[in-house]
Image (cartoon, rainbow, N blue to C red; front, side, top):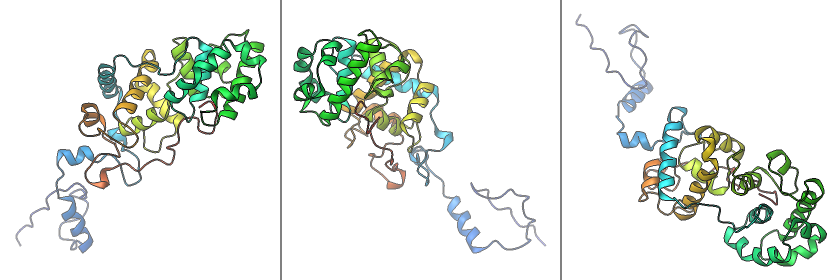
Length: 298
């Protein structure tokens, strides 16, 4: 009897010695699966398949420090003047502005703070006032009543517990009302040049997922931890500004330059706004809420 030619190997075929040749005919389903698996994928198809059916990025495609470094280099080149866009002249002004910025735009905060800062030039001035006296100066900002209470309470603690000076440690800042990790990182990095963590706001969260730096369902704490692993500590504050500036100017929430911007074209492997086969698009995360949502400080 002439020998039967071996089947051509496929991506999902079993080892050649798994079944004796001719032991039984392959079922219709295995033939179908084999035929499907023999269809070759182009390099572009493989590159675009960023999300699995479960909605998470395959571990083998997770960028390491080298690719993250390339991304940060390109962002730094694109935004050499990136900085905190909240207006402030002192640490306590930055703290107040950051508390106000939760679920609000920096532009909106910057319109309200000149009169606020003029009326309350020091932490002691806020402490001596009441939340009701602060409210009229910030009424154009969302959640202004809760934020007035947070500002008053935090400034009161700064005066009574910290000698009128904004604390310079994460643990101490977190004792203040309205202050969560994002706010503390903003103040430490921009007012004191201290890198303790990585600022994760809604822009950093969105871009971290679109660039494939984290899983699509990653929560804020996971995103911060991963970015701290990928980016050198000395660059944490600047890197947050690079990401935020790119998120505001190019990689917006609705999408805009997802395919023609060189950074997005090269690194946006998981961008949900890219055109093409819908199967390659990431599923919007249920954790898409901005950082520290529900906390008046953000």
